Length: 313
Image (cartoon, rainbow, N blue to C red; front, side):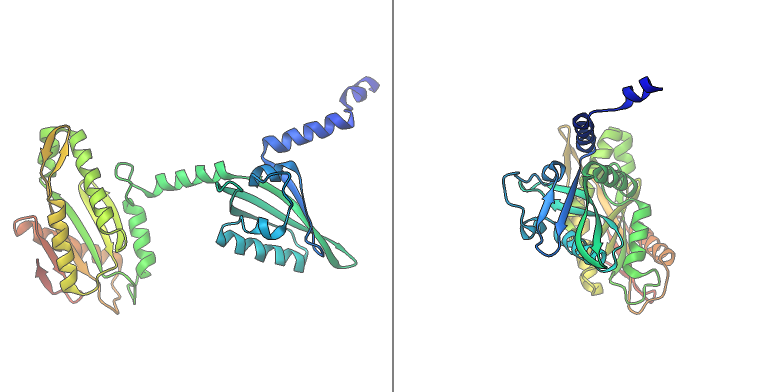
């Protein structure tokens, strides 16, 4: 028993070294702030997270400036709540290091009280940038079409409900637009899927550039794309914009030394206000408008208004 106890006992310096190594490997540091003077104390791990020179004075105002705006507000609110209530808080915050690199940091805050009065706060800071990037990558994979990078059908419909609150009552969308490429099947059959994929990616890029500030663009599958159009709101202007979109999408693209020509038919369901139809009804209406555009000769735009009125462009 004595031998086992002797073997497990570690000298203080070894214990401290192992502790520091474990914290460094986990990218964790400890911190403390005296409330009366706002004097900060950091372990080396916190200096490493902020990329802060160890010789620089630790002034709280300088460190707070390294937090990204929203994170700064959240941090200050959490700090005030811990000081007020004495209950510990943990939150994720985004910072810019001393060199300007962005990082995510998990911040824990606790308080030490004497005689019921908060005297200092302390806690840990951990670099969780890699975890956040991994989560963001998974979110992107779940929400985007892997070929074009546009919103996929699921997130497109979810975002649509957010925009118009599903009841479409005083929402901010002006039209639900469906786009179907003309001649895409023939292109795939003739030149193969690589050419087809290149075509879809180019169409996605053109739509993304054209509607970057005017709506959400998604790929519903195959050669069908969709737009939640936020502007313009006037039906005549919407028709003009979508006709211009047909012209833009009909420009040839070049792939592997080949000139590839495709066209596009567009059907749109106009969203009036107030409007109480659900998303499924708008998709059905836009589908009818798209069918009418194709039946009229393709490379065309067809709109259905909020009271069932129909117009071609």
